[in-house]
Image (cartoon, rainbow, N blue to C red):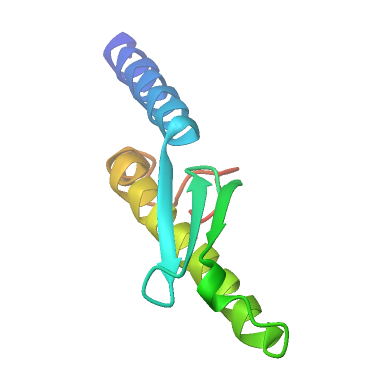
Length: 105
């Protein structure tokens, strides 16, 4: 029983370390061949957005909006991929039912 408890505590420490690492990680996504880039933290928080002036056309705001959304979606997908890589092995230790309270699991 104590071995099981020790294993659970070790998994909890690994999970906390992975969550902290995810909170610090930043990934960048892009759209339009790099005309728009978005940077998000592993938690999904958008922390940066760059727009190339070439794509700013007052007569075509819809394209710019689509590029911004595309860049954010790309960065978010990359953040989720990193979360799956870092937290996936830990989630398996919980019976494969995912981790309660974590988005995307």
